[in-house]
Length: 500
Image (cartoon, rainbow, N blue to C red; front, side, top):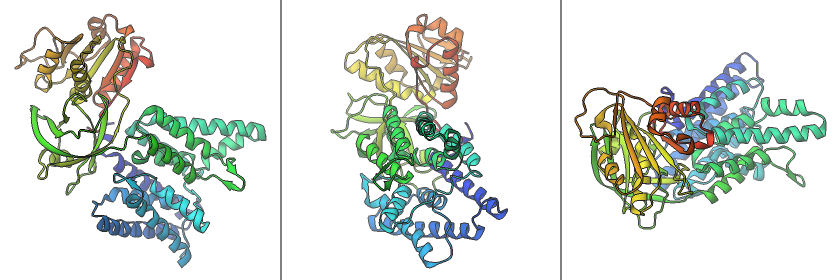
C-alpha cells in the first residue's frame, strides 16, 4: 500500500490504462489478437492528439485550468472501447468526433465546473444515437481479461471502492445466471460475461470515476445496481437495446441527483502550526454551507510543476458545523500540493464534492470508541466539538495513537471537552522517551494498539461501536485486532487517509 500511496488515484488509473494498451499492442504484434499494431497506434495518436488540442481549446475559451491526466485518461478509455480504426477519413473522423464530444462535455455539461457524465461514455452514446456508430468495447476480450482484472484489483485497493465494484459484478452475474438458467446456457452465459464482455473494465475503471459517482456508500450500491441491470444485453425497449455507455450515463444522472452540489471558493485566513510537521488551515465558511461532523471534501489547488499525485486531495473537515470557520489539518510532506498549500500566494482554494459516511451514529445511546492514528484525529475533533457545542453527552472513549509526543494535536481541546461531555481520552505513544509536554493520567507510553490494550482500557468493548481513522496501515491493523476480540463487522466503522 505504501507504493500505491505514492500516486494519486488519477495517476494510477492513467498508468493502468496505458499498461492495458501496451499489453494489447504486444498481443497484436504476436497476432494473439486480430487488430493490427499499426491501427492501434493510429487510434492512440488520433485520440490523444485531438483530445489534447480540444482540451487546450476549451480551457482557453472557458478560462479554466488544464488537467492533463484527465485528458489522457479519457483518450485512453476511448482507445480501448472504440474498435481500432483503418486509415481512412471516415474512421479517423469518427475518433475525432468522439474526442471532441468527450472533451466538450467536461466544460459544457457541468455543474459548478464538475462534469455530470462520464466523458468517454457520453461521447460513444451520442455517436451511437446520432451517427449509428457504436463502440465495440474490444478491451473486454479473453486475452486482456486477466490483466484488466489484476490491475482493477489494484485500483479498488487504492480507492477503497470494493463494495461498489463487487456489488456491480455480483448483481450482473447473478442476473446473468438466472437468465442463463431459463435459456439453458448458464455456463456459457457466465463465461462470456466474465471473459468477453465490458463487465470488468466498466466496473474497475468507469464505474469508480469519482466525479460522476455517488459519495455515500448506500447510494453507491444503488448506483452499482442500476449499471448492473442496464448492462444486461436482454434489457431493451422495443428494438432499442441498452449498451454499457447507456447504462453508465443513466447511473450518472442518479449520482448527480443524490450528490451534494456545493462548490466553495474559500479564502485562507490563517495557518496554525499544531506540531513540528502538522498544520491547521483556517478558511472562511459560507453562511449557507452545511455538513455533518466527520465528512470530507475534495480540495483542488492548481499549481505549477505538480507531482504524480496531482492537484486534488481529500481532506476531512476538522471544524464543527457549530463553528463559523472551516478548517482542515494536514501533516506536511514533500508533495508539491502540500508545499503549494502551505505557501499560498493567493489565498484561494476550491472545495467541492462533500461526502462521507464516517459520522456519528443516529442512536445517542450507542457507546463509542474513537481510534485515531496521527492526523486521523481530524474527524473526531469535528464530532467532539459538535457534541460539546450542542450539549450532547455520549459515552465515548478516544484512543489517540502517535509515534512521538509532539504529534498529539488538539490536546487542550480534548482535555477541556472531557469535562463537559462523557469523554475519556487516552494518549498512546509508541515512544518510551520522556515527554516534553504535560499529560495527566491519560498517557500510555511504549505501546501500540493490541488485544490486551483494548481489554485493559475498554472493559465493555463488546458493547461498543468502534470508529477507526488514520493511515491505511493503522486502520487495517486495528480492524484485525478488533476482529480477534470477537467484534462483528457491524461494530467497526472505518475511515482512512490513503496517500495522506
